Amino acid sequence: MSMHGSCRCKNIAVEWQTVDYSVVPRQCQCEYCKAKSAAYVSKSGSSFRIRIHRESLHLVVTHGSESAKFHECRNCGDVVCVTADIDGETYGALNSRCLKNKLGFSPAIESDVGSQTVSQKMEGWRQNWCHPVHITRQGGKGSSAEDAVTGAPA
Image 1 (cartoon, rainbow, N blue to C red):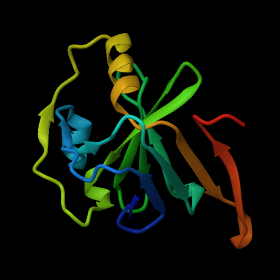
Image 2 (image 1 turned 90 degrees about the vertical axis):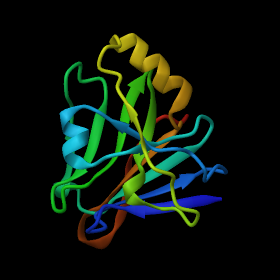
Image 3 (image 1 turned 120 degrees about the horizontal axis):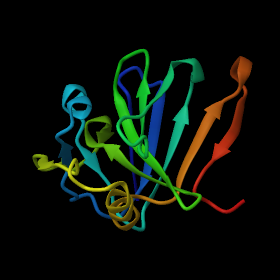
């Protein structure tokens, strides 16, 4: 089973391979996530694919320890997901507000990891986030090229 979604302008599309549609979104309490109204969902053992249609409109934002990468669309401003590289593997969580869940998501619960060390955050991400994460970028002039697949063996 899979769940699909995208940013509002559809520049960044996602497909999440999961069997659990009942996950509860976690609303980060940092200023960035609050300003973006982001509430993240993930499930250990599941994976997702991001397809970026126009690379020039893909923005990767980092904060604080720079251990997490927020994937944002420059055109519509939506944050679609957050990823982190841990021991050469890419893990991630999706912004529930960018997903179409046929069952709907329950209200988000507040999550604050601001007092955790980087290693504590990364261990939590390793245990709870999706893995592997695949990132596909469109090629020039309408052709498609997969120039980055992360978190999966070659």
